[in-house]
Length: 120
Image 1 (cartoon, one colour):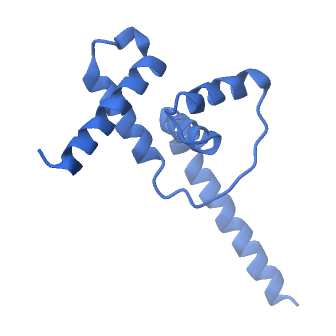
Image 2 (cartoon, rainbow, N blue to C red; image 1 turned 45 degrees about the horizontal axis):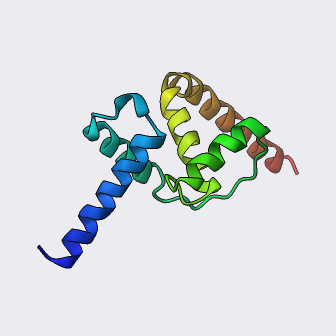
């Protein structure tokens, strides 16, 4: 086996072990779920180019820090980005309802601006 393959397999095993211990200990025997979880983390963290600042209570911050400490996430930022992404996915129904209304509001605002610019 090539050295790169060994390294890749070690990384997968480490990811799975970390996920098992931290994410869902009740499913320790189910390695496939852990690998899917780690894969979902990586997918959710692609293309993070926007920066926001947020405030957390102590309890939430301690939980985020615990996941960073066991190296499930590389940073607080990465962990928070993942949970925001998952929260949005979990409430897809809400976003599906509100999105058409938000788009209509944006359209009306643009029309109002254009009307005001014409009257100058």
